[in-house]
Image (cartoon, rainbow, N blue to C red):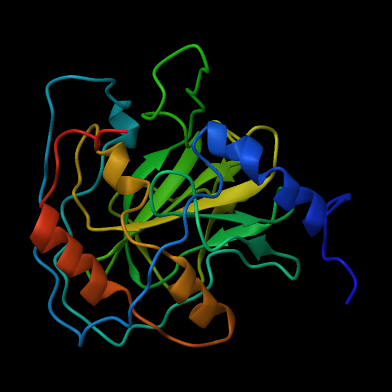
Length: 246
């Protein structure tokens, strides 16, 4: 089988960059152990968790009001609409996935929901704090299933995508890019988490459950739902006010 081409580089060459990305928070790590999600359960209501310390986003980046999970059986779409994509099932240090595609390819809403956090400015500085601004330009959707779907390193955020705006599965939110700590490699960092909305909840927003089993399903036209797994994580962990020790 021929190598998958992404821009001018082969997927093989891109995957060779994964160890480089790991040093900055986007890369591979120890493989997770996955289990089938438990039967669907209603996720807990979203919790607003402000913090008095740490970097504060611009007013325009503040999240919308907490979403209330009301539906299951929602349609789910693969978050990058492109013919040439590649992703690794693991990530460095925490659950997440880097989806490699050409810069400019559409990043779309995974499911029906409401826009949560939006960042239209790349405030990442490798000399500054590592974590709060790693994603560069980013958008999150609080799905009607009570799950937050987050995409970052965008080139741009689509016009009209602002906190509180309703979106549908497959609707374009922005474009794949290399802002933040993307190390000049075009890709989308994709994370799944409960909607613990607040000024400095980046360590939750970046991802708390492994996306790959769900991405594998959505890419094939399936509809595997992460709501039960996310709800279980939230019941166990709540909305931590500090990132886990590393």
